[in-house]
Amino acid sequence: MTQVVVGQNENIESALRRFKRQVSKAGIFADIKRRRHYETPIEKRKRKAIARRKKRFR
Image 1 (cartoon, rainbow, N blue to C red):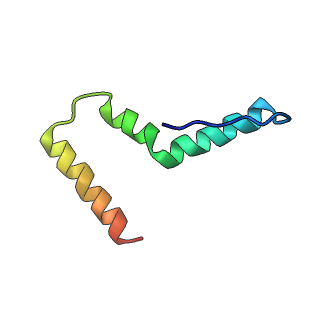
Image 2 (tube, rainbow, N blue to C red):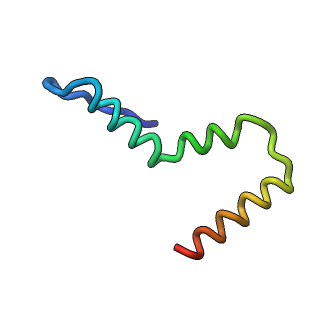
């Protein structure tokens, strides 16, 4: 679970930026997008194959 502690003199915009950065690093948005609809086994295999290719070329 992602949380941000806002400092006493910190404005809300910078705290929101930090929160968004932590959420994107944790991969929460990608997980939400992936779970929005049912994924067939073929789609799952394709997604995993693409992820393996991306990981190999890094």
